[in-house]
Each structure stands twice: as C-alpha cells, then as structure tokens.
Image (tube, rainbow, N blue to C red; front, side, top):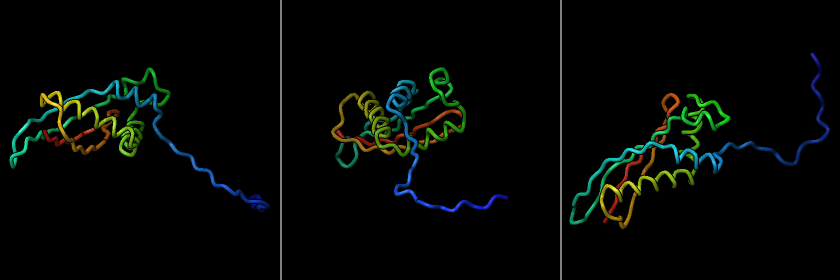
Length: 135
C-alpha cells in the first residue's frame, strides 16, 4: 500500500457539477407529449369556476432516435426529477394545461391556479396537473 500524498496546496474554489435540461431538449419533450384533459365549468358561491386536470405523458422511447441518453427507466426517473425541479419547465407544462382549460371551457379564464406532480413508470414520464380557473 502506498503512503498517502501530503497536500502542499489547497484549492481556493470548490467545483460543483450540476445537471439540468437543455433548452432544446425541453422543446423536444414538449413537442412529443400526449395530452389528455378533463374538467367542467360550474357555479359555486355565485362564481363561475372550471375544475379539471390535464395529464401529459411522454413515452421516452419515442425520443431514442434523437437523444444520446439511454431512454430507459433510469433516464425517465432522472427526467421526472428534473421536470419537477425546473421552474421554467413547470411553467411551460402548466401553460399547456391552461390552453386545455380554455379549449374545454370555451372561454379565456380570468385566473388559473395549477398544481403539477411529475412521476415516472418504466420508460414513461407522467405529469398530472390539477387546475382551477375562474371566469
């Protein structure tokens, strides 16, 4: 066994490696999502509301021809974590749900509240967005 090397100098700065979605990969993902929405308008306490949900599904295997990464379950888990933690990505995903509200309600809402949950199963990534809108 070799003896441990003695440190003569130390680094002033510590380096950190961060992983994030590239802007082009986010555009690619948004373009390949399957969108399914349900909901309805109703009147509550004199107000016109829309309550519903939008489910976005990405079959990661559909991107195998354009991604360097393996489009497997481990990659889907990493992608789900990235989407959940990336503010820009969440805003873009919620915007899809907002367009669905307008489509299903037949009118542009005054305000929208949305909560997104991202998960993976196998090589698929699911984004469930619960939406409440006022008119």
